[in-house]
Length: 485
Image 1 (cartoon, one colour):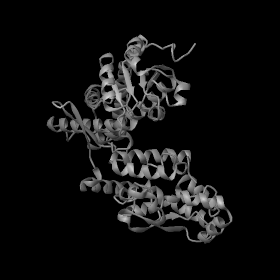
Image 2 (cartoon, helix red, strand yellow):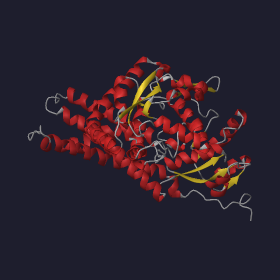
Image 3 (cartoon, one colour):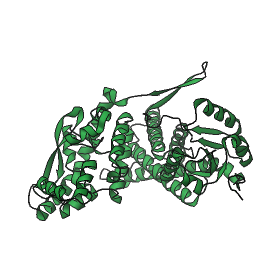
Image 4 (tube, one colour):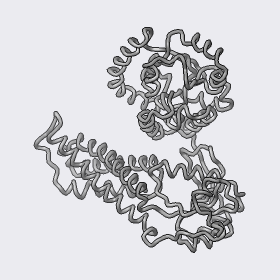
């Protein structure tokens, strides 16, 4: 039997129809528990455990169990944080703002209720920090468990089985914020062999309405940006009456999207997309600089003792300078000394020239990527430093000097400028970063062209929240030692 002609379709069960609602209830219960634990931990710290503990500090149970959780839950609901399918970093951003507004509201109520002198401000601050962290941890654990067990997933059909569909599936797989159950694909001529082998091809575009109606699915994602605008609009209009939600990937892949806004021009029946250039605004650049300084100063508390130990190890392994300053290109095309712990032997340039002259394959690899997988210049401790990215710790001083940022494009040498082509103008807009988009997406396993595109995407989509996300992702990548050499 030809599966394409008569596929054995999986129908949406009654339980799956209410999966999103059940998931929302589960999140509300999880958030309630997280808030109570946050308030309780803050209470114990303020009353019993901190050096400035106050044993007379007291809060009635009604605040723990009713008032504070109710305020938090209302703002969490208002910021759409209980949606089943949302990128985890976006959900985290919404939770951050919801908890911030919650604590501001609590502070305001304390002021108007004339109890601000009784309630500890330190306690309120700790409730916010613990509440934000606990809510995220609980949610992450729940989402990972449900996805691993394929529970409370939202049934979905994708229309279009090409490269775009593969990218969407990859995002669903790697981001714990999503929990879709893929029932199959609709496409006249599936381009992706992997999709055709792994999922059912339920029919062609003309069969879409009947397939969706028969299977009872309420969510459809159109992953066919190659459709001409007229055909895409017609397809959406045909499908929308059958389902609750239709999502589609427009044919603008790679365009700035970090701060994309949709404007509806109702009378003309068209929509206008507005993309903001955040880094063109002075207050955003000032905010990025302030963020760099605060985090770098806090990081020095850990970096300085660790750096002294690493410096001793470097010198004992290969006597010579401990810090190496390499000339790199920074903001506006200006050169600056980029500090690193030395990971190479002395006279590394001569060693490299001799090695490239004797090995044609290595010379070709160097010309393509300006990196070598088996670099003869690397010392024993240097290999460890590079694998763990600890060689870049001295760059915190570059950040404090304003030559670099915590997150930004990869710092490059003069010879790489021509490889950036027209993208070099994006690179010159901001200081290069200790970490960035390419470092958390494969690092040395990515091609040079992919690195350039990632640098450009970051600049065009920058936000402080993206910087926070990439810093957290960097910790994970470094811990896994993925793609570094």
